[in-house]
Image (tube, one colour):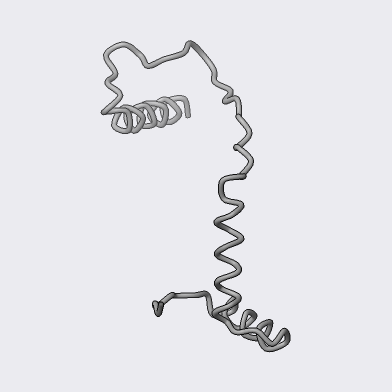
Length: 88
């Protein structure tokens, strides 16, 4: 089957050189590479769990809606900035 694929220029150049040195076609290299990736795809090692370190009491402040969290964080940044200016 014919398809169009976009490849990184350096990767393509290296693959062509490799194919030439080994007497293979670029198509056979792509076939083999895809087969290897698909075969090992299910055997991927699960990501290691990471414990996030937090400070203070957990959870959101009362009256803070999670859908407005960005807005609240911006407001807190402004409040901290004003507090720093007032101390100067």
